[in-house]
Length: 293
Image (cartoon, rainbow, N blue to C red; front, side):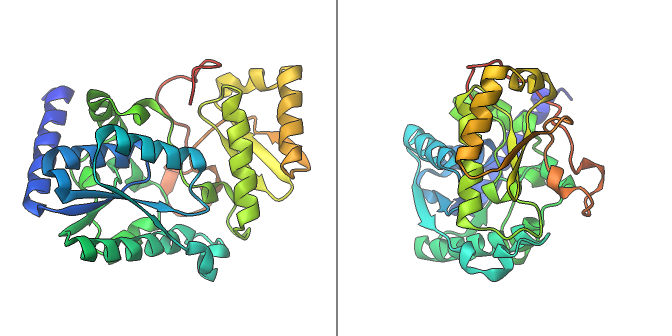
């Protein structure tokens, strides 16, 4: 069976699952996975599909605007709710199960929304690629009965991007952007201040034309990860000075460039999860300067 036929079969099965549910709430962050699910569910169920975005300190302003833009463009039912994971000391202390406590707060809020809306189920945008990484939030989803239909049907990132491109979803080719807390090493307390520093640092780098990146927060040290192909550009004297001055203005004392390059989950090294921890993405090449994020 060709990849195209396989994707068509996955889409048909997904449509059948959604029709059987009849009404649902989608946990919608604005990333391509949840955006694809939200748009697809809207196409199948119309007003029976409600996308809900959790707004908190760990959601970047760019991600929030992307979520709002996609919802406006496709005119699907969308609600923004405020979550308060920062009030949970188990989340703030930032141990390896941080994501479990964050998702627990999210799904409690989505349960409330689902009850009010009379929705039959809560869905998230987890895909098959996610299942091999360290993601304790999956446990929270399981405990709350949240379904991940894309993962269930074997959707991988290439499938999601193909569906998103078919519908014209703006985030189809955007790099993944997990929550800001994922830039804080385990054991370092999550604060509004260090989340804001990370967000400001990544906004600066994106404004300079870097698309795929992370700024890892190590106290007064900012460790920059960009694809290996982009490392020489960051060493350009003028650009390097702009980055150093900008990050120091945010509160960092030292600015470090990670010579190993960008890889997802680099702060998960040493945790359970197998060889995919700290892996480099194997998708498209680094963007050229000015090509957007």
